[in-house]
Image (cartoon, rainbow, N blue to C red):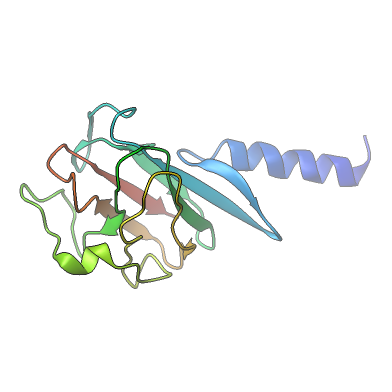
Length: 151
């Protein structure tokens, strides 16, 4: 096996083993896509409270990873960070600003804005280690919420 092939294979295996997320190609860096679909992802228990609607419920990525949310559902959804949260709040923490796309880093706060079916979000960079909780403006109580852990 050539060393070039071995390095590429190792990189592919490491990307595929990242807990959560679907590896995607993004030029020179690794990427992760989180699927957004209320009807296909049943609620599950996480250390942060009940989660659902995002696949996976907990996505673990390396600092520097590019993240994108993809709405594979027919309903509009958002992926909006819940600032400074260590548990999912019992009621929706979102205001109307969640409907507008903003932010490109996990630590700076983000929202995909209202994504229609088939749409994807802006690229968000895992810029600092931490646990980032997020949810959907429209379906937070469903419970459409999940977590990203950047290491």
